[in-house]
Amino acid sequence: MKQVRIADTTLCKENSHFSFKEKLEIARLLERLCVDVIELPEIIDEKTDILFVRTLASFVKKSVISVAAGSTIESIENAKKALSKAAHPCIRIELPVSPALMEYNLHKKNAKMLDYVKKCIECAKEGCENVEFCAVDATRAEKDFLKDVIKTAVEAGANSVCVCDSASSMLPDDFADFAEKIVKKSDAAVGVKCSDKNGLACAQAILSVREGVKIVKTAVDGDCVPLEIFATMVKNCGDSYDFYSNLRYTEMYRIIKQINRIAENADNENAAVTLTDADETSIHLDVKDTQEDIAVAVKKLGYDLTDEDEAKVYDEFLRVAEKKNVGAKELDAIVATVALQVPATYKLISYVINNGNIINSTAQITLEKDGEQLQGICIGDGPVDASFLAIDQIVGHHYELDDFQIQSVTQGKEAMGSALVKLRNGAKLYSGNGISTDIMGASIKAYLNAVNKIVYEEA
Image 1 (tube, rainbow, N blue to C red):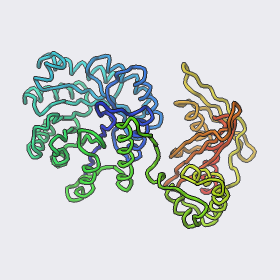
Image 2: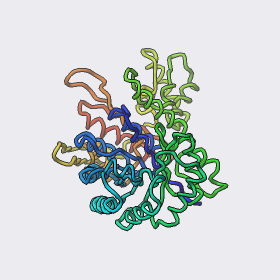
Image 3: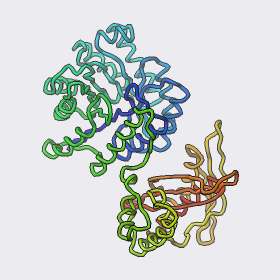
Image 4: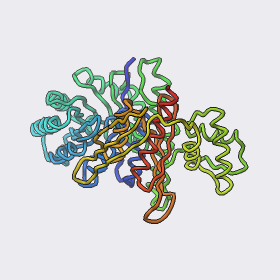
C-alpha cells in the first residue's frame, strides 16, 4: 500500500487572528494527530515570526515543519534562520507559474522566471536539505512552461513539487488527469493543493491520489482540502484502492473539534480563549460524585490506574472536593500526588542551569542511584528542555512528554511553584508532581517523579 502524506496548512490561513499561544497549541494538536507536515506562512516580521518557528521547533519533533519563502531571497534566508534547530525542517518555495500572476506579482516572464526558480531552490538547499517547490496557479499555466519550471525546480534540487488549482477551475476528473501527467514526468514526489471554492477539493485530491500523487495539502479551517473529510475518505476507501495515511483516526474528530474551537475564538475578539482538551472541559466533579465517577474521569485524562490507586485518588478527591469543585487540572494534580507512589530509584542531588538570550541553555544534573552519583550535561531549547534531556541522558531512555504545566500555589516574591509533568511510555501515561520556590527545581522534581514511576513499574 502507498502512503498519502498529509501537509496541513491551517496555520497559513490568510487574515487569521491566532495569538502566539494559539498557534503553538494548534501545532501541538496537529503533531498529536500525526500529520506529516505542519506548514507555516512566509516570515514577515523577522523578530516575532522567527521566534515563533524556533519555539515551535522545540517541541515538534515528529512532523516536518515547512516554512514558505520565495517572494524574495531575503525570505529564504529568514526561513533558514527560523528552521535552524528544527528536527525535520523544510523550506517551501511558493511561486506563481501562470502568465497573469507571474507578471502581476513578480514582474517576470517565462525565461526570467525559470532563472529565478533555479536561484531560489539553490539558495534554499544551501541551508536546508528538504526543499519543496509549489507551482501556484498551476492549472492556468502554459503547458510547456509548467513542464519546464517543474523540471528546472527538480534539477536545482527540489525534493518534491506541488501543483495548485488556486482558482478552482477544474472538475475533479480533469484535475486528476492533469496531476497524473505531472507525476509521470517528474522524478520528485508530487503533491496537490486544491482550492475548495466549489466544494470539490476533496474529490480532486482523492482522485489525484489514485493517479500517483503522494502529498495532499489540507486544512482544518481554510480554503483548502478539508482535513476531516479527506482523512475520512482515506480511512474508508484506502483498503479498496491501496493507500493509507499515518493519521490517528481514533483521536481525529476530537482534535479537529479542538482546533475549530480555537479558530472560532480567534475570529471572535471578545471570546475568552481556553486551550484545553475537549475531553477535559467536560470534567466537573464535586463531593457528591462516586468512586466510579472519579475512575471514569481519570481514564478520560489518559491514566490507567490499579484498583488500589483508584481508591487512593478517590480518598484524596473527597478531601479536596470538600473545599472546592474539581476539574481536570485539580484531578491531574491529585493523580500525580497520590497514585503509583513508589520508592525513588533516582534521587536528585544537585542541578546547575545556564540560560540567557545570547547563549544556548544548558543543564548539569546530578542524580543518585544505589549510592552512586550519576551526572548528565545537555544543551536544550530552553532551560526546561535541557534539564529533561539531562535526566534522559542519565536514565538512558527518552520518554515522550505528553504535558507540562507550571502554576503558583502561594503568593508573593517567595511564592511556591507547582509543576506537573505527564510522560507517556508505550500506551500508558505517568504523571509526576514537584513543588519548589524555584520553577526549575519544581520542574526537575516533577519530571524525575514521573521517571521513577516508569522505572519502578518496568523493574
